[in-house]
Image 1 (cartoon, rainbow, N blue to C red):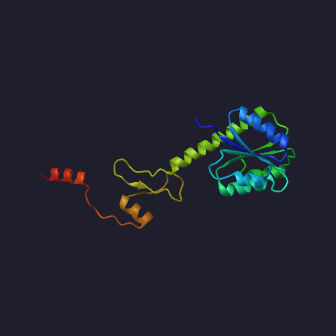
Image 2: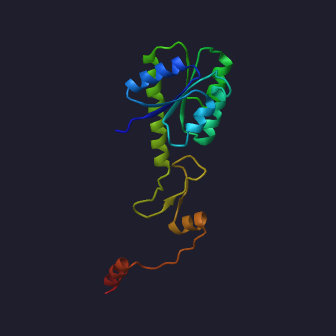
Image 3: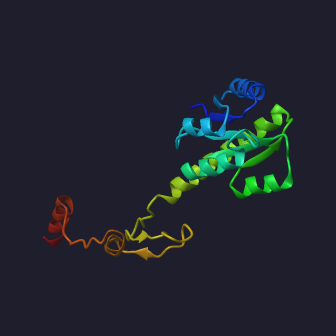
Amino acid sequence: MKKQKIMLVDDEELIRASLALDLTEAGYLVETAASGDEALRLFSPGSFDLVISDLLMEGMDGLELLRRLREEEPDIAVIILTGYGALPSAIEAIRLGADDYLLKPYQFEELQVRVNICLERRALKKRIKLYEDILPVCAVCRKIRDDEGREPGSGPWLSMEQYLSRKAGIRPSHSYCPICFEVAKKELE
């Protein structure tokens, strides 16, 4: 199984190094960044499974980093760590889409549980998205369910012709493939 990759962002070198060591020993691939700007230079969509960021850092803070990461990859899992926990910053972090918010000092075991929960939730979201992207086709009548813009599973069932016409502006002509032609010809004999 592929090791999951975590980016750790903290401007305090000692915290960054010790947490990186703990996460590496726990079986994760870890890259570190000393600032939000450095983190953005290292980040590209699909390159990390989770970002753990300090809240208060020189330059770009953890909330701005969270905002910018979400612009690049909306489904990235993010945990905000802070030694200066306050209700407004926690609310803002959650409003911006942080998956978790943890106060320093913390027990590594607690952080590891939260990391696992975030990674499992991200994997589940990816699996749900995969299933949502499957085009539902009836096995009997071959109609296609059009869920676009609706709750998955609630769209109308359309004939293949209607679906192609609506989605691609294609008007299919009716014909036979060679196999079906032979079957139809034998049925007529």
